[in-house]
Length: 252
Image 1 (cartoon, rainbow, N blue to C red):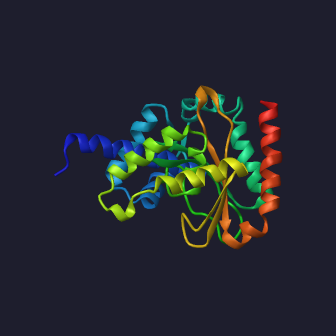
Image 2 (image 1 turned 135 degrees about the vertical axis):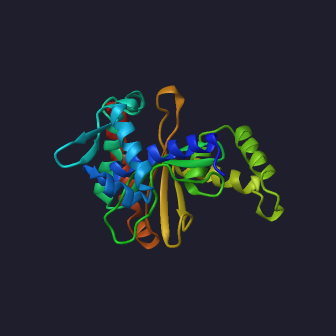
Image 3 (image 1 turned 90 degrees about the vertical axis):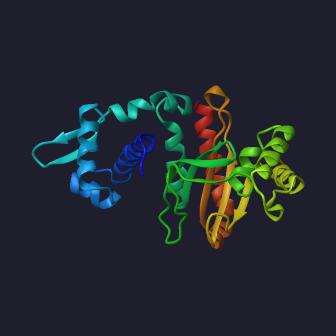
């Protein structure tokens, strides 16, 4: 039986699912299209869309019966974009790199013991990393997590390892602090992280910790694609990221 609290959580999740659907589609959608693509119940979805219209987050065209987010949606995150670059230039940064490398480029940030993808620019090559904004992955066992930790003091990293292990009952799955620190040290020495087949088989990743943003927030930039392709294009990718970051952060 669904409780009132469960209903609130489900409704909130559906609101964000609708907004993310529009972000993916980048075109007006009818209620029928939203229902079909999200597999939500027809009646509750129509009610949700009407509510979002009444609150000013969606506009509804009476002529073609389609919905589209209003400018109120991007304005909600304007202060975050200001922190990342006055005109959203951090997104321009990853789009530039994605265009130059044809690989999937993403921004992610640490959320407690996980890494969460904030924005993903998909590559155009046949084999690309399939993740979406909002997806989470492990902190201690992925290259983007290790890169994020490389900006933390050693004692803080040790606390994360200890907390993570307390949540895992199987000792065989516990993170080895010495191994984590060795990986962190290598990232600090090299200046970026290298990973193979962590998110899915055959996918390679190169990742960089960006300079602190407003509020001392740290974000990881990653370039992902077929393992062989990332290896072969490694020097080009490094040059592309280095040049783009220089332009972005020198301008900032």
